[in-house]
Length: 211
Image 1 (tube, rainbow, N blue to C red):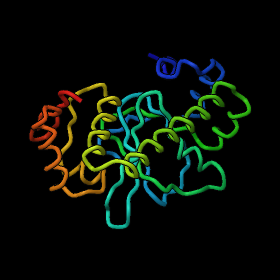
Image 2 (tube, rainbow, N blue to C red):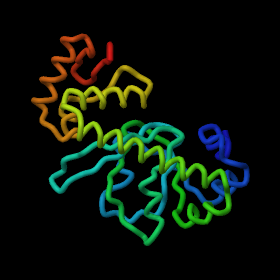
Image 3 (tube, helix red, strand yellow):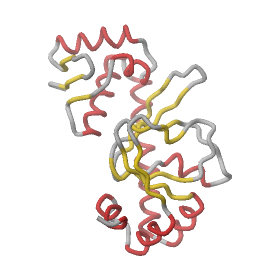
């Protein structure tokens, strides 16, 4: 499969001229699971499109605590990196792969030029902003209006819907970090969910049964 064909398979709305421009100016990268794509304070030179795999976007405080924001899956673009195209701004978020991934890195100056040149790119960027904004609102709602047990259920559902799998390879400690809670609280609430038949707990993964 050619470079253009691999992009077109995941981003079918992109027109031919845009795909040819991507082949000339963009960089294709294969990124192993657990790799850092973006970190707070980093100057962003490129925006990221996801061809395969899964990328986690999160906030991080000075003590290393994480706050999960959303996932990027195949067909998605990183809206926050797109916003850095004005004024050479630095990143305020972190992003890392949670699966082996294939990504396209597009220089921000090219992205800016393409906004007026290619209608399919313009629509993609606007849709990306809208989708990520809606996801961030969902995350904010879960923090502001839900108890911790509801937040855990919301988190597990989002992971299931993103990966299309009821098997979530994650530990209680990792969930606690991403929800800014303690492992003891998460473990206690997961045990209650298990007793209600919602999940089945394993050593290195959680299986969603009835949620």
